[in-house]
Amino acid sequence: MEQQPNDVPKPNKKNTISLKIAKDWAKRWRKLESSYNNYNDCRAFNIPLIDLQEVIEEGAVSVRAYIGVEKMMVEGEKVYVEKLMMVGVDKNGKDMISSEDGLTLDDEGGDIYDFTRPCPEHCDPNSPLNGTN
Image (cartoon, rainbow, N blue to C red; front, side):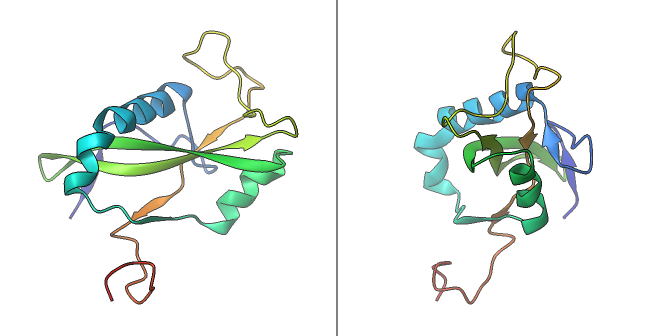
């Protein structure tokens, strides 16, 4: 099944996304959440360790994950893919991103990372947490 991103690109090797895209995905998650999970089966997210290290290397003391939904076209049909967007968090508990206009990240405003893959499809079928056994 070939997927064609509808919402957006991954502009560089760090898998960062724009503030606008992050806001769109988060808003879509909040809007769809009440009925969305009634017919979708997202159980977990696979997070590559190297990508998580990139967030931490920015000087973060922790990482905050926001939930979102990306809209995609798959074989001509609109589908929604769960996303976990991550940002570094400083010692004061603040997200390490900034935006003067609320639409785009400031030049030194940190990054929003999108490198997770939802389960199902990227699952461990033998995991007791997966709920299939």
